[in-house]
Image 1 (spheres, helix red, strand yellow):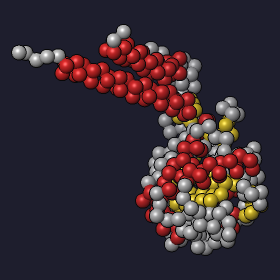
Image 2 (cartoon, one colour; image 1 turned 90 degrees about the vertical axis):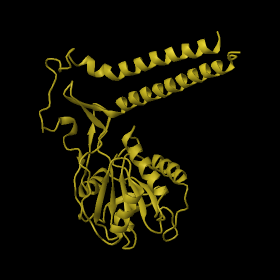
Image 3 (cartoon, rainbow, N blue to C red; image 1 turned 30 degrees about the horizontal axis):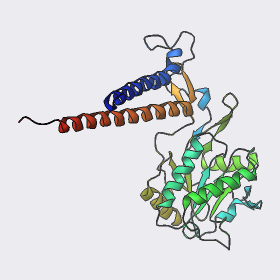
Image 4 (cartoon, rainbow, N blue to C red; image 1 turned 90 degrees about the horizontal axis):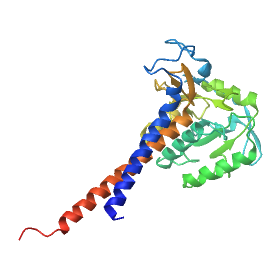
Length: 305
């Protein structure tokens, strides 16, 4: 088989894969809807303005100006018990991230987004601000917290300025009792809930900027935070300022499916979309190669004498 035939065959295979990917993405909706796209008879419907049970009690509420409970007791990756107030020294603002370490998708995206932006900040971790990640899953143990911190500190790739001789005081991953962490989460407006059917927590995405004196300055929602936005937030927190820049759209672990009238996990859908994008990229590459091959053949042919 010559090169052109091989490329053409690969292009056809790529097209079939693309069709299959879109079919996979559409399958859950089609399975629950009529040919006209209407929900199947008997499928639960969610009325406009009504919060579905899957998202009942979940989200991020604007609590700027709230004073954090300094006596919340947590455990650091070195096994040491400490209180939250130790991270509010009156000098440096705090980036607080609430995430559970066994989260299959959204928490990792929040942490990755946080690490991505702090890498590019002019401010130095430990010197100008602190980072504290707290798990809200009582099942998380020290071993996984240590592993998470190790991986993210290595990914951070920048020196940490020790505080009182400890780098953990600059960048830490902590665990805590369920009631203690819930007190902290409630204060900053982070509402989450265990979903037994999905075997994971349902929650929204965001990070919290805390002033040096322990007041919630502002909340940045989503999974990506522009460096200038975070830098400004840290400066404002340092000045003990607080306001409400909450975005109108929150990212959840669940996404509404209008065909079923239910909310379903985003992870599976995201993976299907990623597969589709990958196939499209492959197909684009194959087409380019095919065209380049045709041009070479045309240039190799002798011109008219």
